[in-house]
Each structure stands twice: as C-alpha cells, then as structure tokens.
Length: 459
Ligand code: NAP
Image (tube, rainbow, N blue to C red; front, side):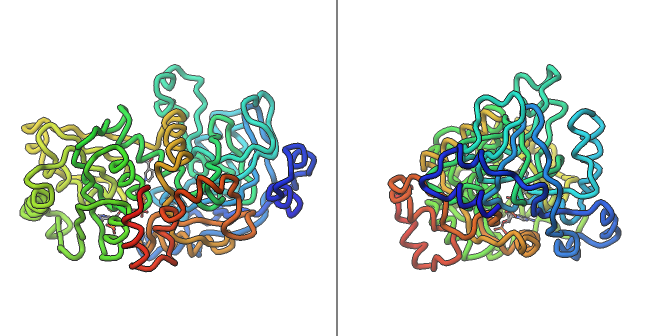
C-alpha cells in the first residue's frame, strides 16, 4: 500500500505507474460483525456506542466484476447512515446485505460475516473489471453512493426508481471507510482538483441528496426568491442545502441549535437564522401530544424574519419532532420535501393545514447519477464548497461516528484512509487560491472572528 500511496502522491507518476503496482490480498477496513447484530437489542438508541460495534481489521480484497472498479481510498467521510449502521438501527445492515445477495450472481459476494461500511470516498482507480470503458486506472475520483442494477424497466426514467437501487456501503458491502473500496463504474465522478482528499470526500452523499431534494424537478424544484426553511442548516445535509439555496437565489431561513452554529450559517452568507434552542421551541408537550401554539410561534417568527412572508419550501429531515410544525408553516401551495426521520419515522401532522392550503409533501432519497454529476460539477467549479469541520484517522472512526451520534459536530466529519496526512491531493492550486477562505469556514481551527471575516468572502 505504501508504494501505491507514493505513486498516487508523486507529481510525476502516470497511470501506468499505478497499474504496475500490485493490489494486496487484504486491506484495512472499518467493519461491523454479523455475530454482533443483536448486541444492542433492548438498549435505547441514545445509550448505544459505536465504539462497541465498530472494528478496524483486515478483510479480503474483492476482485472487481463486470462494470466494477477497485478504488484506493485516500479519504472518506462519515454520514448519518454510518451512525445507523453502527447502532444496528433501525435494522442491522446484515439483513440488507442478505437481501442483496439473494438477487444472485456477483451480488452474493456482499453477504459476508463482516460489513465494510461507508458511503463516500475520494481516491484513485487501481483496478478495472471487464467492460469498464469510461474510467481508467489512475483516474482520480469521488464515488456517488447509489448502486443500481437497471435491469428492470422501472429505473430507466429515474434510476432512483430501480427496484434494485441501493446505497453503497450501507445496503452493499465493500464501502468507503477502508483503504480499498469496490464500486460500480456508474458511481464514479471526477474529483474536484482544487480540493484535498479529505475535502473532496466530504460533500458526495449529502450534497447530491440536498441537490435533488431542493433543486431538481424530482425534489422541490426551488426557484429564485423562494423562502426555504432549512432544519439543521449547518449539519451534513443542511450545510449544502443552505449553500444551494443561496447559490440559486433563494432565501434560506436557517434553523440551528447554538450561537456557534448560527455563526457558521452566517459565514455561508445566510441572514435569516433561528436558534431553536435559544428560542426554546417545544413542538411536543408530551411524547403523544403536539403543541400547536408552538407551530404558530415558529410561523410568526418566520414572518418576522421574512417581512411577513411564509415559506415556499421546507427542507425536512428531523422527522417526528418537527414535521407537524413544518407542514403548518409552509405557505398555501408550498412544498415540504423530506428525505429522513432522524428523530422518529412515524410522523404526525394536522392534515387540515395540508389539504385546505393545497400543500404538497414530497419524499426524496439521495440522487440519481445525473443529479450527482451535476451536484459534483458545482463542487468542481467552486460554486458549492465542502463543509469539512474535522478529520479523524481511520483507526479513530468510532470517535468520528460518535460525534455525529451526539450531534456534537458541524458540517461534515472526514476520515483519512490511505492519505498519510491532511492537505494532500490538490492539483489545481490556482482555483484553490480563489476559494481558500471559503474552504476553511467550517474547520474547527477557525475562530469566531475568522468566521465573521469569512462571512464577507464571496464564494
Ligand atoms: P447531521 O449532520 O447530524 O445534521 C442533521 C442536523 O439536524 C443536526 O446537525 C441538527 O442541527 C438537526 N437536528 C437533529 N435532530 C433534530 C431535531 N430533533 N429537531 C430539529 N433539528 C434536529 O445529519 P445529516 O447528514 O444532515 O443527516 C440528517 C438525516 O438525514 C439523517 O437521519 C440521515 O440518515 C438522513 N439522510 C438521508 C439521506 C437520503 O438520501 N434519504 C441522505 C443523507 C442523510 P441543529 O442541532 O443545529 O438544529
């Protein structure tokens, strides 16, 4: 692996140098064990610890099959699906791997006693399976997290409707939190060359999800001037939704939970910010009863911030905790677009506010390859920036996952895999220089005064 990393990092190396090197028979990976799948049974989510379920160990290297490639992973990132995987919630991912294996053929390789998790990577193609033409050994790539088979007709207008659509590294094996990863060629995207490996690995899953959710006709189809309420506006999804809203000429109303997060939202260019903690919203008076007065208080606050307007779009993902309020505060004819239910997946809302006001609820999930390509293009052009706050070593991945489980993080949390340190992998220093300050907004080394200064920086 050391020679491979040297060949990748050498400014003089050519793809043939990478191709000439062997790939080891086994590699280091963050894995869950099938034998542990019941370890948290009966334990409340809050008390489950990723450190108890996650292991760093060597696993056998898979051979890329037709249409697949093996990637040397320089850096990866933690997504919330990594949290769900490590907590074995809502179901152990091994049930998902078994289901995949049942379709037969090469899919059977995914049902193993271990699950290599992780749904983002930045790295270099080191082996191509038969039939891969568009990508070569030596290509510097990031991976889109959606795996599709596309043998059925249903997925051919929108691949997210493929009956065999899966999230790589969550519903499939050989994910990105590892030194090598197996992906389909139809997941590959070019790496943004002004970014370091860890910056490049950060946006993938959440940026493409936020792009479909907010921007494309499959989601809310946001337009200029729209008021967009964004829950968790500087979290993983939200930090990209906020940027996409601003870049698209919309008006984000950013909900956060601390003054520090409010400062981060301001550093992105947002002006309308609600600190849900400081303002003390309690949408549920007890676990079974919502307090509609609190929905109305939020609606009044939004009108105060917007000069009397309601929201056109709510960017939803907390779920049970906020959904009733989200439906209430949306304007007549507006859209609630949801991709998740972090705080509970059985939602309650007052349907009178939906039908009488002709609102729409749209369900959305990740993004198809085309949408992911467009979202990645915005990153590559420096229109949307990674929101990496902190990077951990792969050996420390459990701590990285824990920080998200506890909502202690900002933006995205990165993981160094083969990259021997931070700051490597940049091939376009000129483009980088144009965006350097914006690339550091979320870094934990930035002080509040840095952020105030950075908020004046044009993206
Ligand atoms: P994240 O980085 O943890 O950010 C979520 C943010 O939501 C938090 O930072 C928090 O911000 C806010 N939040 C959390 N609990 C809340 C609550 N009870 N009420 C209001 N706000 C709350 O996670 P993420 O990466 O954005 O993912 C969020 C959810 O989306 C997860 O459930 C994830 O699995 C899901 N997801 C789905 C897809 C998909 O394709 N379907 C893709 C990506 C993620 P504040 O504390 O600052 O308010």
